[in-house]
Image 1 (tube, rainbow, N blue to C red):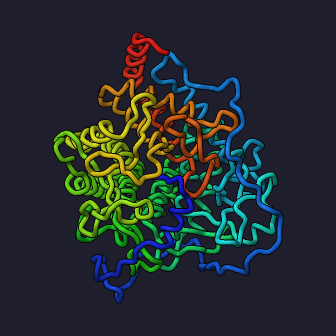
Image 2: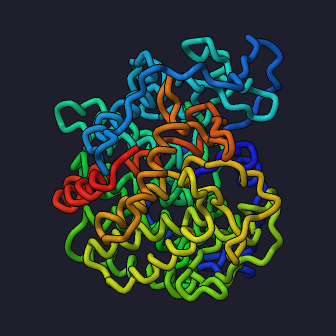
Length: 542
């Protein structure tokens, strides 16, 4: 999951609850070696960042506009008379990835098309894809829009990115390469290879293993935490990288990282559970158990399963089965009074029971009790994809239960959008949640992907649900001038908000996942898609 309120998430990540070894049942005692893995021979030292004096000079910052320009008169949209328009999804995915990589002029965006690009993606982007500098206290202005390049003055103060942002930037290029093909997509493959080099060279900890949370643009480590969320995303990015590059070093590194995850992150007392994060040497747990890290761990295992064989694949299959069992029998809970509905909490206690701390915005991602419909639909999709790969068909019962909970409580009828990405355990809105009047981008993407997938693969009756939310996504949620998605649109007015295109929590990952599933389904299930097209046309379109 990605979040909109970057400042709040960043503050939470640095002020998370510290849990001692005695309280959380680590795999090993503090006196034991912190890692039994030999470090990757890709970095000789770690240079940590020490903040310098407060900046007192330099050009002033220019704030991002509070409203977008007027809409363009002609906006490319999927064909109205088709249930699924794969040609549009392919063309748009390629175009938007180019915007992420190079902006409107090929020289902005994440910097991937600039001469001298070193593979470290620059993910903080303005509404028109220009690079901006994130603020760290009072040291760095938030943005210097209007300048085509970040002046060296500000670069020296310290632009930094996170392992999750780097991993997601790698991933979107992997999928753009697949969509464009080997000839037309060469630029995306180059970005993948460069991105992996940066990930391994600068984010990997050569002493203790695992990936650092935050690294400065010049390779100095700003935050040495080993967040589970970032480390499982790196695992997925490496597995997906190997699937397009064929570089055995990418697979070797992915398997090495899997061993780190198994030895350090997995909960020894609850098979299939995964811890939220650690300090650098894995001696102290940081954060609270949550479904977010688990979701992307499960996702990464599926990606790794697809690129391995023999004993390695068998081992990963066992990990997938263990994780699915944990999801079905521990994480998923039945909604009171509704035997056909299952929810997952966002936060769990140390025994993996749903959190009981009263909800507040400040504690939303650090211990508060609330269910997460966005992850319900995301996990429903992942369970169904696992079954497609040959795993236990009974897992679909849990997938359908998770979908039932979200469908009954989280969606707004007219627009079809997921209105409540956060609910209580009885499916009711949380009074203090400031997002109750917003359609958040990531939840719409996951909902659309699940609706589409279950309609085509499982013959569920989500045709209208998919088409309605698709219209919301490609209409109000999409920037008609510069492309890409807004962070949200208001529920009543459908006016957008959150105009900056990128930050460390939003790197087009959910967007790409949705688009890629549309392409995959069209290729793998052409007869089913054609039949649904015909049914949809017979229904009539507006």
